[in-house]
Image (tube, rainbow, N blue to C red; front, top):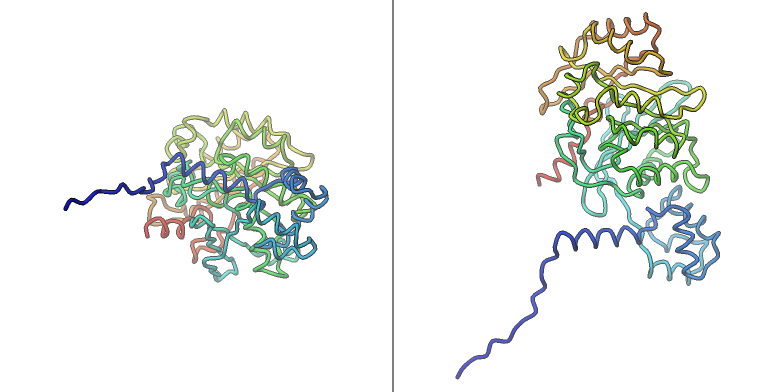
Length: 374
């Protein structure tokens, strides 16, 4: 007796291209990442009046619902149609750590399993202007040699919804404390994820969104020069630039992006940034012991920034085990700051917050790295 082999259809594993296509299709259906015009098109395609898009936008962003069923002022029939034709992505708080100084670090898990981090920095002053530091990417491709996030490499861009939802969830968690300022200085290079950045900024500022003033939002870049003027034309947010060196030789070494866009190219782009009246560009300067912290560096910095309407934030380096760099002494930082002030520059030493929970500048990415290594 002979047996006959019957062919069995075995599902073929998805190719990388098919996986990317599936992810893109899923993102296209996600209402949390849709801008208002796209939401309006979706609403009209489902036979509803355009004003419903604004209702959706409010439910998704300031109210932060996770399902269409929670949108109680929409008819059940409309909610059913939305559920058939769209999705709502969501991030969740994986861990929340509170530092001795009150700083909170959030590790958010995305719907795709990635982990990103945000930092809530409370302000103890009379103004009480609390700040949220938001991530724009999982990891970072810029590879600044002093930054922990840079050691992760770039895993992927965050969607506009994932960027904006960090604000929604932190506002829910902090309650009456609130968030008055946003700095796009978390994981990733915001200008590298430009389109999603711009959409998320609209979610922050639109009346139907979080209704924040653009004056309260700062976007930081490590030096993606061609997109700096474009940012100023597309938005009215503040600009911060991570300069961190006064010569190309040093900046090439600590920030490889300088080999593509050197200091002159970067500063020329900053000159083209359409700076609103009574605003200044912030130049961030991470001080590394024995690398960029001499009086000669201070003298060159004064020369480089001559004519700019700007301020300088001096950031003593936050050391971590994966970096060879060290923080300069307080005396060195004070001397550097004094030189700048004596030469008519606005210079501030930015006090590190949340160091005991790895929430300080350049230290984000610990939780993401744990997930990657698991």
